[in-house]
Image (cartoon, rainbow, N blue to C red; front, side):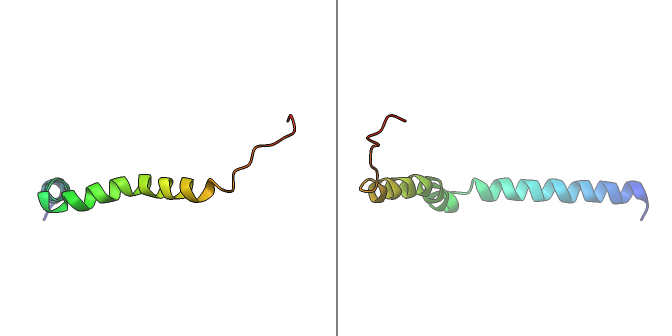
Length: 63
């Protein structure tokens, strides 16, 4: 197997992997999981805001 043949097979392999990853990312089975993961950062921020609200104090000095 020469250099050009190996390069051709390697290119086809990489192209196939990219197509598989794209199909996996856009499959409807994963939509709910991806939506939950995408919104989880906002849920964590809201929890942190609720917990930290009692700890916030305004400074009385002019800094």
